[in-house]
Length: 420
Image (cartoon, rainbow, N blue to C red; front, top):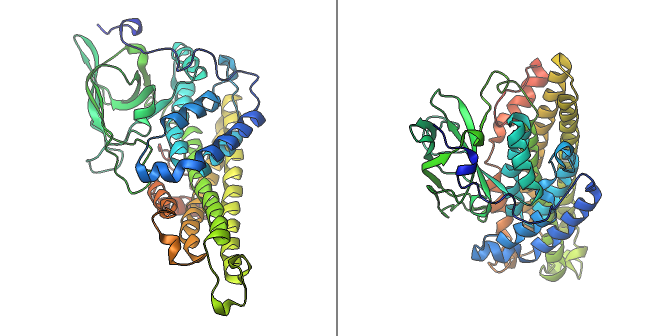
């Protein structure tokens, strides 16, 4: 017989004693706070990257500002901000430090999974925690197997109750989270999620993420050594209903693209500052200051045009995701709902193409602003390219080109996958 929720170490009901957000929390206030936090994050982002300091304190500030509770439904006491608002918030945070912004992506994915597939009791429990500052990390990706989504982690029924067994190679934000959402297969082979407190006995976390970029996302290995799981900590999403298209995969991928927009905008700030303080014009340029050099002006124009173009494409996608969300929860069904979902997914794929290119282009062009001294380690400008190149591998961009092209050529809808 499985243990009940109350007999397992569930952890506290929230990180903070008082709620950090509520139904009356206004989007404009949260966006304003995100801008202030983003500026604060930017001050030491380079140093944290160089010294590999995980942003525990920085994430705590973000959660205190109520940002982690942004998508909690109003029915459960939350502000239920739109994805358009959330995209703006995420861009501001990513501009300050893309590591902090990325840690929040599996969190918001978890929020939507709870909303879409959780029971009423699960929604009440976990949304209460979110309103009190909880952070949920994802533990999904594994190494090995023939395909990216292959999975060996299992949730098995034993005489003592459910037990979680396996190893996850990617656990973004796990070392800074309150709870982990673990993807596994049950005894029937169905895909499930178990949401467990990270202090649960048998959970072993390793700070072993050594990617060249996004170094501070704590995306390391997590082992689950016969971890106790209560029946009501399990969410099923491989049922017939769960296999149907919904808006969550597009919403998640849209949020991933906010990282690239934030990086491009951060590069712009660094490039402009470098043109003023570090770059020197050539003697044959005909100018006394680098900021008056036509080629430097061209480079800055190139960076900002692509960054703002990417931002516009992303916000268009967010608006179409909002349309899909409204249709889904507003009772729209059939072909009309399917079309709204497809439009959100295709717009997200288009935005991802543009955003990836903008971030990588900006991160390379900063060196065109002026001189070999821009490559000095003390400037750490290379972190922008490292972060962009690392994060853009999350979802292979060539597949996004194919999905968009196939849709416009043949009206073929995008595949129903986690990375839709």
